[in-house]
Length: 321
Image 1 (spheres, rainbow, N blue to C red):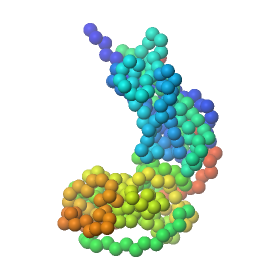
Image 2: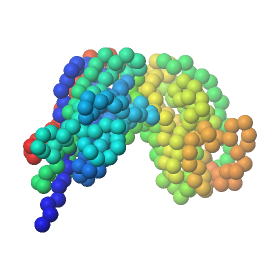
Image 3: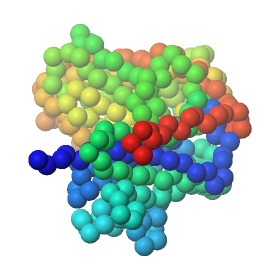
Image 4: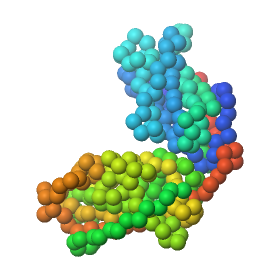
């Protein structure tokens, strides 16, 4: 009778230099051991700090994590003698216990200098009595406003659009206090019958209410978002690039108001690429089903100096050791 083996993922941490993290920031390290010690594994990191990460692999080989957005980092692993990933676990003698050291360096938000380093030991144990478990390490607790004139042409859509500002884990920040400089994102979803949604413009509005246009004709303003990048849309959902929380006219109150066009067909892709810059976008005109102007709840932007934050607990499951 064969015995099934299950991976038990453990995450231990040893601190080389503890940073004084601003309250409310996130660093989450998550191991995925795979189905067995022949399949590939991976480690992911999600953070809204300025960070880089690497692993010390079998034989002392150092391999850097990759990231396309500076928020989500990933590195695939192979088990010794299995797979062809650039990083392999080290196997402990006479056991089915595999370990790798992960080193994360980071600095204050917006800083290019990484003054602090933390080391994590990611361990995957295969045992007939094990249970799937992935434990996480968490660290948590002025633009010049330009003028823009907007004109909406077409009927108002009856569909409901939900717009919110979220952190790097997707948690809703509407109506909450957010630290100045924290990495955030705008997300919207169309709950109506239309198959597609297309972001046209977005304004950041302070308490006065002064406006600053961060999205114009589907493209970024060049300060908050790059001029050649807009929202990314898949079906009825769309999201902005990541950006740092800011204030308008040094006013702590902030909300975002966006104009969306409803489409009978899907308008997947980047809103700036699909904006038809320099030409009239005739292909989708007949498919438009009106527009909707939607705003987030008010958000309080707080200027918190580094050194006032705390460090979350490290949760380690040692029940199967």
